Length: 368
Ligand code: UD1
Image (cartoon, rainbow, N blue to C red; front, side):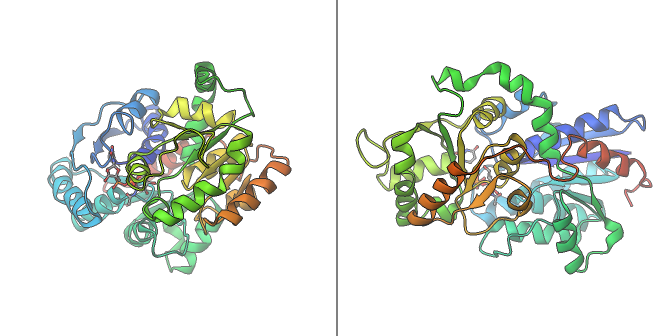
């Protein structure tokens, strides 16, 4: 069987890497084609991850780059269509919820190709999130839906997706984490920043709803000021956020309310994993980081009003802070006061990619 996988943005790479390895190891002898849409293109947002995860070079790089949602989605569709038509894979595999995911799935499906969605069924129930729209649209057309937890299965059941299409396999992002944990630890990136384990916090912020609104961003940074007075808060800054911080004049000069927040460039996979695993506390609006901190046993404060990953709260180390200054201050205090121990939600055991490939191996040619 010929499998074509699509990656586009930073959180896709660590999800596809273990699937590529599992396909290569399987006795069925799959052929694999990797397409990079180019949604993320900076070396630190893309090439660094290919190196850290030992991923093969993409067979096709579509170079779509940045743009409005319509421009970016349409460009992926226009550029991937001839690739899909020529390659005629038995199955097109998409992961996550970025614009590249929905664009590739829609194009493949309209060419009559079978589509598999990895990380299906996650729902924030917040239609102002572009990712929620991407998730819903991808899931409704996918032939095979691979889920990370039972809540996702229940979401899909409620939406009328036939049960035979849905497979609870576990979490491929955790496959990557467990496979690279020791390597990351040996790199000891935190030490190169002069940090002592468990005596610093890590912060990430990139969602447009958080960083594009000046008042909200200022309020959030104010909510972190108390923590930053107690310990360094390391902030690897997404390109979108850096430009926003500069635009609104919030770059933290010495001595203002954000003292102690240390801005650094976006980090590679191993550097960031090391930074996470030694953190006292992680503050984030990312989805995947809520999952990674659960497995690592690091308290996570999510700077959003909702999460599509509630299992990280019920069975993990995560809590929702909202985005107000008071909510963030309270959530930080609670997180610091409660003991955090590593938790392993069901099937987050490092073998999700193997399960996915085993299911794919049982499909007929043509992927159905
Ligand atoms: C995208 C995903 C989001 C994911 C995030 C991870 C969608 C709708 N959003 O958001 O779900 O959590 O990736 O990072 O697909 N930029 C660069 N260099 C790059 C890439 C982007 O400078 O390599 C800048 C550009 O100014 C661009 C902006 O970041 O306009 C936003 O990039 P984009 O891919 O549109 O969305 P993200 O915010 O990265």
